[in-house]
Length: 93
Image (cartoon, rainbow, N blue to C red; front, side, top):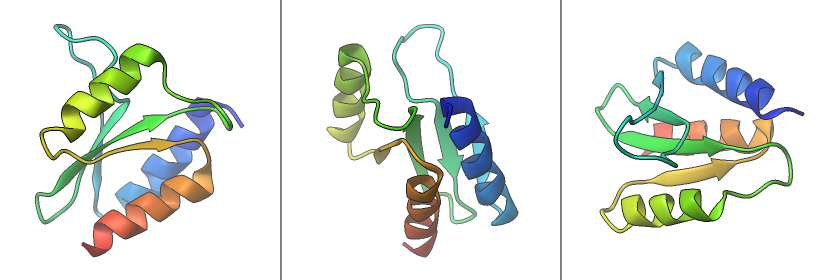
């Protein structure tokens, strides 16, 4: 399944649960994760979407580690099932 299809289905699922799903880009910083999810509680997390079996590029992996070192949750999702799990898990925290 293509990355954009996985992303679309996971974002639809999140929105159905009242979670905001923003496409995230940063003009001053490259390799940022694809989406910023904001829960009704105010908790936020990032998701990097990939095609099944793909992994982040080295610059993306460095940016993910940079964010994680500041206690920001970053997930790499390469299937719809995995994405739904992340949404459900984060939504229950």
